Length: 166
Image 1: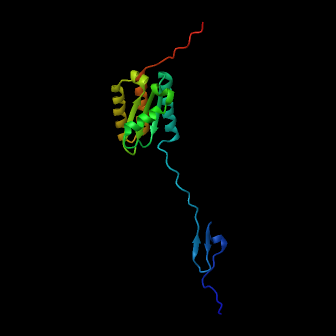
Image 2 (image 1 turned 90 degrees about the vertical axis):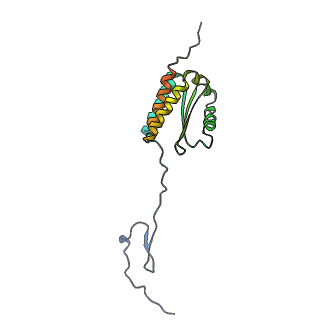
Image 3 (image 1 turned 180 degrees about the vertical axis):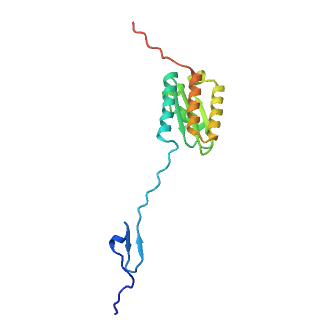
């Protein structure tokens, strides 16, 4: 059996970066930690705060329940949006849902019985046209905030009657 030495220079430990090692063959072995990219949310925290504020003000002033859904609406977008609206439960009659599926480039506005009485279809059509204009400019948040305000303005203010205490 023969013995021998590996020809080549050896690297000092301080020449190697973190996760690097020189193998006895002279080959460099490098290990790197790979952080998975976090999915980018469609809105920044500031944009979410603006949308939340618009919905809160709309709900407070009108007495209606405003909600926004952002996600895939499947093949029958209207049916899916109506099912999402029904998930508002006891608040469904006063519910106003704006469901947007950016990937499909579709959206639906669903109003419950009480909300529909106070927000005419024409106003929903105008809000839809406003959203389309904003969405074409890649202004998703602007379109949603604008639509919530338009629908809220049309509904008017509502002051819930306080029970009489005699």
